[in-house]
Image (cartoon, rainbow, N blue to C red; front, side, top):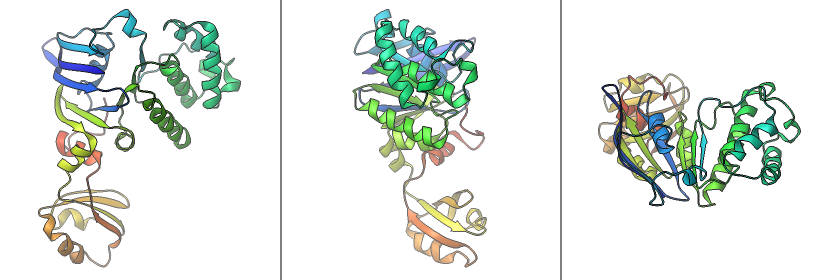
Length: 302
């Protein structure tokens, strides 16, 4: 289990991380979320001992960081960290040797993962010759080839098409069954909803929402209605029974002033707005993010 307690890190006069605490159990996918400049990357780098915190404790299985623990961690950074002129298999052999693996073991596992990602015939190619998505696959292989006990994935779906995104989701869920503690940081809230057991949303270095994903959604979802429609839905934002409306191309998430007026609200909508689906439900994580952090945040960027 990873335990982060009262983590603080200041750069000049600004706290990038200010009192963040959470735990990640083995066999759990934990979502570390937040807007641009929230402190996610700083938190990750202190966990990995890339930078040192000013205060607070970071323990894995009750032990502080050590060289031995480093080899038990796997990390996929958001930025590309590959040598572009190196060949794929040479890159995998080199980075895996840094984790203490013997080259014979690396080769056998590398071929298995390259085959699984559809790259078996690309081992001789240079990194720069691969597409952005295939470079991401190589970085993913580097992150978990050595069978880490703690795996940190920062934007793992970057550059992947829908088929490869589904394959990666399957792999993450498979790794969870192997008793690995997984930290997952992404801008894609729909992926968090599909994969994460618990989340911690931080803003300006501080925790603002934390807990089991199901509990968080229940907490913020008492008056939310999901509507799928055809037509002009702009009336939803102006309706007197509506306190907030997030309107998209073919669906909307509407929060009523009082959920007991849900039927009255439905029957008051004009016939020009064709309702295809109407249900009271928990809000999306995206809506919770907007509600908690504020509408001034443009996107879910670091």
